[in-house]
Length: 447
Image 1 (cartoon, rainbow, N blue to C red):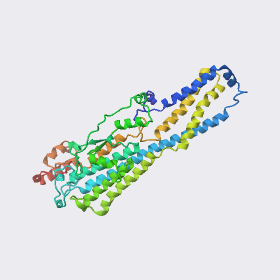
Image 2: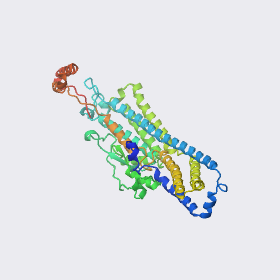
Image 3: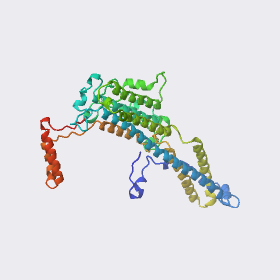
Image 4: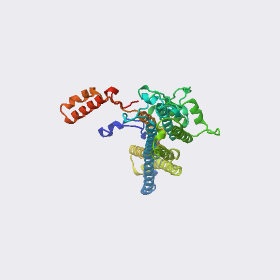
């Protein structure tokens, strides 16, 4: 996705080639200009074309054809933009639902008491210890369970994005082993058996790639995917990768089935925690706990909506008909222009402009109708979306740490001199600190 400056009446937009559509209109425009020049130099043909009584009395019939083609292309551009815009909305809705599920899973399992109004953070010291009430049930600590949830949600989202862009290579997933402040993301499911990729990152070396223009061949796209790897919190272990490659019958799994498989892992991990392990999940009210599974299911519904755009191309008959009309228009324009305008240079320029404009508009539609595929710089920012999801997942286990001790008065003192409200807050905080001084203040646990 390109973010650009809009100042100076669009002056800065004129000199950017990468991501634009107009270069695709230049070759057809030059072809039309060349035909116009050739007809002008061919004296016999030029004499006949110039004679309106013998050749073209009025271009009305051609105008009808040009209007029809123009309407078809405008409608197609509108439909393409709708696909582009709706795809972004669906991906955001999908991510929001899965993030809600991860947040609920972590919060519902967190321990605490009346001195921890925000409960314990994922890597708080108490979260790394057995649960004080039901540790006898066994299972990982809250910290390790939270790492499992963060990893599964990150992996689920990354696989969904791979499916959208048609990328079936699991080597294009890279590992983020640590969380906030270097905290480990090694949960109960973590196995240190991952291996680095043996092949280096490759980049396209053709001239179009260097200019930033789109490339539609599969080889070029696969190279781009290797440059656009998606990060997964906790990484992808060798056992997970092997499992994601094949189904229970040994058949190669498609990208959509991989998402379904990890969704199953997500649900299984939640149920296992609730039924068999320590933590607070089992003590959460069932109506509240059921909401956790509902939002994950809702996220999968939005995944299906976004997948509809990813796997369903723009209808072929519509695209095919526009292509036929467009190239018919390309060859007809120079003949009609030469029959209307007598100046040779003006003929070539007008022929070029007319054909250039139509083909450039068609290139815009070609790009927007596939919002997930990185033909050029205008695709949806899937890497950025994945990184944002990872940051939000890591934020779920973080709570503030506040020491309400007498020293807190120094924080309020500068404003307390002039603001009675702040002065009251400072006095209240100081009194609270004194009452809990023996216990080193009230702790709001942090990751």
